[in-house]
Image (cartoon, rainbow, N blue to C red; front, side, top):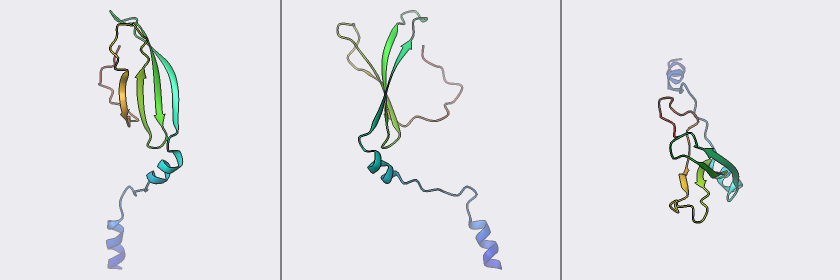
Length: 99
């Protein structure tokens, strides 16, 4: 009886569900979802329309956002807007948004 009482307190309040990340990686390795989009920043002073490509990597649930830069556009040739990383599901409300 004392042991049962002790085991009740030892159980976690939020049970940990192990995720099979290796199985997800092996099942979805080299599979990428690609989306095309436009960032309309024309309301700001020097804003313009920018073409974007969003890659979602199924193997590790990461994303990257690339800008499509046309030749002779006068922009730097660094097309990465957001490098490959996991993005939070819920962003803080206080952060200023670009554009």
